[in-house]
Image (cartoon, rainbow, N blue to C red):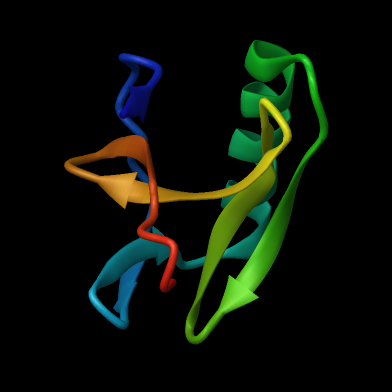
Length: 78
């Protein structure tokens, strides 16, 4: 499931088959926007060489990366 229709265009890296934010700053900016949308805290987490967004949706821990220049949930194995 994607979130937002606005493109997420920043430098990205591919790590373990997932497209992630290259920089913590860009990930932090999108974490703030996502937190407002979800009305719950969203943080950033280093995964390999990139950064993912992390939060809870309906009590379930979720990580988001980038798929096709949109925010999207990462597979649980990430």
